[in-house]
Image 1 (tube, protein in one colour):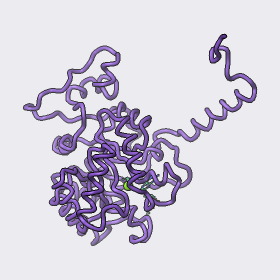
Image 2 (spheres, protein in one colour):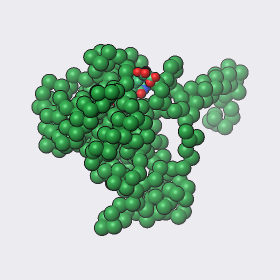
Image 3 (cartoon, rainbow, N blue to C red):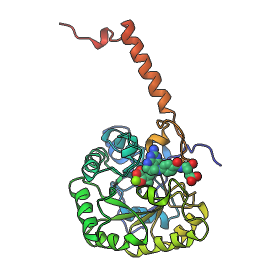
Image 4 (cartoon, rainbow, N blue to C red):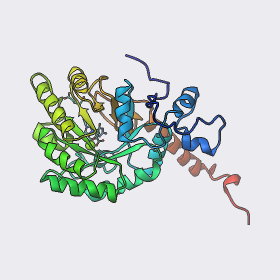
Length: 316
Ligand SMILES: Nc1nc(=O)c2c([nH]1)NC[C@@H]1CN(c3ccc(C(=O)N[C@@H](CCC(=O)O)C(=O)O)cc3)CN21
Ligand SMILES: CC(C)C(=O)C(=O)O
Ligand SMILES: [Mg+2]
C-alpha cells in the first residue's frame, strides 16, 4: 500500500508520426495556464506530449503505453477548472450529482434537464479534459432510438464529448446505435447504481461465476463500439482480467489497480462527504474541516467587527 502519491500523472508518448503539440513553456505566465495543466519538472516533460484536448483516442494510447489516467466527477465550472488545470484527464458529470449536489438518496430521480445544466457548467470550466455525462435512469433503456435521442441531447445541448451508459450485454444494441450516430459511449458494468433496487443494494458484483458474465458483458459492449468500459465494485482480479481481455481502456471504482484509469466522486476524494464512506474511497484532503473552520472564523470576524477592515471598504 503506497502513501498519497505526490507525482503528477504521467502522459504516454504519442506515436512518432503524430505532430508534437505545443512545446513546454519555460517561463510562468498566462500561456502556461493554457498549455501546462500542472506544474513541476515532470509536468514540463509531460506537457510536450500532452494533447490540447484529451480525446477518446488518447485514453486508448494510455492503455497501449501501459500508463494510467485519472477521472474525477465534476458538476460545476469552478471545480471543473481546478481539476482540469491539475491535469485530470477525464471529467465525469455523474448522476451522483443527485446525491452530492441535490441531497437525494439515490441517482434514480436525475433528469436529462438537470444533467444538461451540470454538463454545460463543467464544459464551460474545462479546457483540456475529456468531459463525459452520465445518461440518466429512464432516458435510454426503452429502445436504442431513445438512447440515441438522449445521447444527442447531452452532446448538442450539454456540450459533452461522450456519454456513459449503465448496463451489460442487454445494452449492447443501444450502445451500437449510439456509436453509429456519432456518440462516443463509455459502458458502466458491475455495480450499476441506477439498478440498485434490482441488484438488491450496494453490493460487489462479479464474484465467483458472475465473473464470467462480467467478462462477457464487457466483450459485448466493446464489440458494440464502446470506447471504454467502467467497472464499479468488482473484485480486483476479475477487473484485471476484464482489462486484459479488452483492447479498449477500462476505468475502475472499487475495482482494484488493474484497470487503465480510476474514478472517484470528488466530494468523497477531498473529504467533504459526511458519514460512512465506501471502502474504495481515499481522502486526499479534509475539506469539511477546512471549510467549517474558515466559515467559523468569518462568522466570528463579522460578529466582533474585525471584518470588513479598512482595506475592504471604499472612501467617499
Ligand atoms: N458520494 C458518492 N460517491 C459515490 O461513489 C457514488 C455516489 N455518491 N452516488 C452514485 C454512486 C453510488 N455509489 C456507491 C455508494 C455507496 C457504496 C457503498 O456503500 N459501498 C459499501 C458496501 C459494499 C459492499 O460491501 O457490498 C462499501 O463499503 O464500499 C458503493 C457505491 C458510487 N457512486
Ligand atoms: C461513481 C461514478 C462512476 C458515477 O457513475 C457517478 O459519479 O455518477
Ligand atoms: Mg453515475
